[in-house]
Image (tube, rainbow, N blue to C red; front, side, top):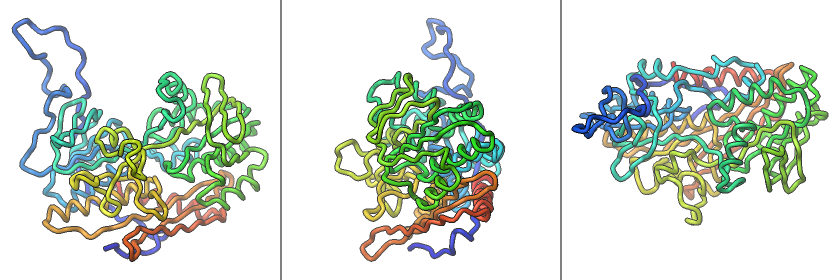
Amino acid sequence: MNQPSSNPRRRFLTAAGGLATAAVAGPALAQSAPPAASTERSLPFLIGRATDTLLPPGKQRRVVICGGGWGGVTAAKYLRQLAPQLDVVLLERNPVFFSCPMSNKWLVDQVDTRYLTHDYLAVAEKYAYRFIQTEILEIEREGKRVITAAGAIHYDYLIVAPGIRYNYEAWFGNDRRMAEATRARFPAAYIPSAEHFHLKNALQSFKGGDLVMTLPPPPQRCPPSPYERACLIASMFKQKKIPGRIYILDHKDGARPIGPGFRSTFEELYKDIITYVPDARIEEVDPFKRRIRTEAGDFDFQHAILMAPHQAGDLAWKAGLVPRPGAGNPSGGWADVDPLFLHDRTDKEVFVIGDAVGFVSPQFGFYPKAGHVANRHARIVAYYISEREAGREPDYRLPDNLCFMMVNIAPQEGISVQFDYKVNAQGIIEQTQIDYNERTAATISQDFGWAQTIYEDMFS
């Protein structure tokens, strides 16, 4: 049963449980050949290999969480709070949590790096779950094992929180050289990695000219955020008197969500800087010639933010959670889950949370792929698992979503959008969307208040 709640624009998040251990080493370094009588390499105990058993089955039933983003970190804490009898293990390849939400502000120096980063080890130790920093290589559903660079881990429940991947194949097919050049020279910076630092350095050193942004077709990670990014870069150009022009190449026929708010911002604040181009479906991208061909025209550029189409992250594919092309499923490219309970349709012990979740409703298609939704999915799935471990069948719960967008630096002004969900009499999830199009300073205060409370929910 869906729980009633107050207006989320006025609601602070409730902090919750969590867990801990230390990072584990990655793949072993190459060794010289062992003596002829030995068939095994001689390695220190804590240098693991993919063929090792990293964590064998124990006395406690185990939940393994693959991915330490907004969903994964939240799931670990809430599982420890709601089902402390479970052994919870969080696997993540990055040593430090870096937040994509709020990172557009970081690109233009409205927040510093410390504001976006958090310590995995500290929160894991505080809430007594295992955090293992390692690369996930494979997920063996049949054997209920996750294979990492440091060894294999058995699970009873699996939570896959892989975020997104860039579908460069849609642009370049099997041409790895073109894909790698695009990512290296003109990164999208929508996945926490060195891309964000590369893009920030490029923006800070930009002297002028045409900057082109390609927007991925829906569904995509945080749909309004590319428009926010364009506005903040334009605001920085104005402040620093940089003679630059930004071209937003959008697959859609108009900016949305918060369409009226963005359109008025483009026209009233950045008329001489931002050119919005609708129906600009990509036909060809050439990172070497710095040229893009679209259905709306061709564009040359001095610099670009090239956002390829989005799909469920690599781990969802490796786990067999994404239907093969042509399978007749509307989730194409995204994980096929039960819309209400977020588990794989064929395996109730495997859950997907966050951006990778596929089609959930014929009314609106996909949940917004946003950090707020990932946090809510994590809390919901932790509840489902805890209820099942207690011998009860859980009632369904639904997320909500809030997105705040800063559109001006001086003065700081923002717009926002709110999403609420319910299940109708036919069992279909319905979405209600409310756009707040008026630019206000109060919206920025709400934005930072939202970020503070949700960070506390995840890490405090």
